Image 1 (spheres, one colour):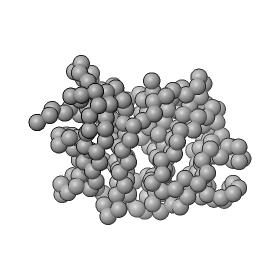
Image 2 (cartoon, rainbow, N blue to C red):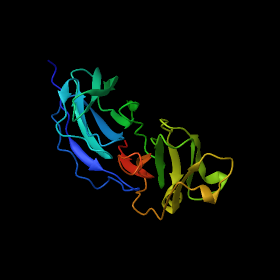
Image 3 (spheres, rainbow, N blue to C red):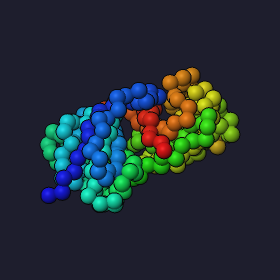
Image 4 (tube, rainbow, N blue to C red):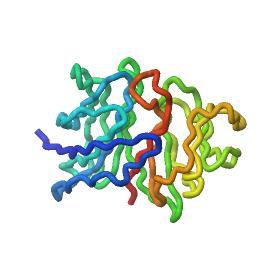
Length: 240
């Protein structure tokens, strides 16, 4: 059987908290490998287990936390399977197959519910932002919310960087200035104009965001209960 290795590092992100200062994984053997980051936003009190090409990743993956690792490859490019299981019952929740290439980065995100899970698995664009800027993409992972708008650094139409992101949609990267994203991040229901009475999520004075980085921002409930209010989960991403 092919030997695969996934280095496990659990991280957490919450309320525009960055993972920049988390410990670096131990180095992997000097062989062909790709890299992946796995996110769990599955609703209900369900922890998950991951299997990568039939190799189980040790430990249960709790809501909102992150698993980072490196997958050893036998070829420069190889088909790799990712399976998400219910940690309590062992039942398969979702599975996907992806072609992984040496020295590339990938991300897998499980969210939704056991009855209607959504599993996104794709390569990460590691292009760095222009100097003094930040690149950020948004995932709408809150089933109870309709289409949303995202404002960075103000509430004018010029500051609306995403118009009408739908549930399950992962946006393209938006490049913004350090000033704008640190000043404010505001989420509202989709509309033609900004209505201050419709703010769903608002974070201001975001000093912890670091310039010259890429970020994934997940619009998801603050906890695994369907009654949890929506918030923003912020995760630093790899860059070249």
